[in-house]
Image (cartoon, rainbow, N blue to C red; front, side):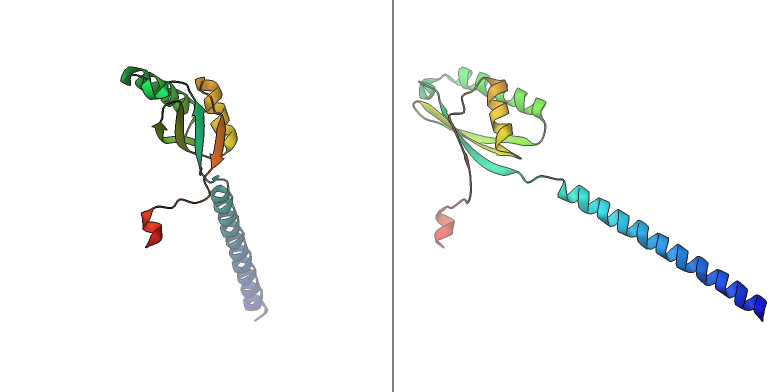
Amino acid sequence: MKQIVKHFSVLMASMLLTGFAGMAQGSAAADNAKTKKDSNPVMKMYVIERNIPGAGQFSAEKLKTISETSCTVLTAMGPSIQWLHSYVTDDKIFCVYKAESIELIREHAKRGGFPANAIYEVETIISPETAK
């Protein structure tokens, strides 16, 4: 009988240790997944005001060249900044970007040789759908 109790005790201890180790591994894996998830910064939306005299009169070729320069810089900077589109007016270009930080917007402007006279973080987007 002592032998059975001893084997049973060893078996129970092994099962408990294995269970706790498995729980610890599961907990570590969950913590690691949470850390990875939490380490993905949120992409915020920004509107950049660029004062560029005569921008509205730029040729299609000049606008293409500006666009190519911007895209080259964006590719080099990686996926933490994205250009969505721009609005060209007489003397300004208003660009809409997504980025992890305002610093990335400034860095893009610096590398591309573009002015970034004002940068606004978008708080909310409204449209005619908002009225419904």
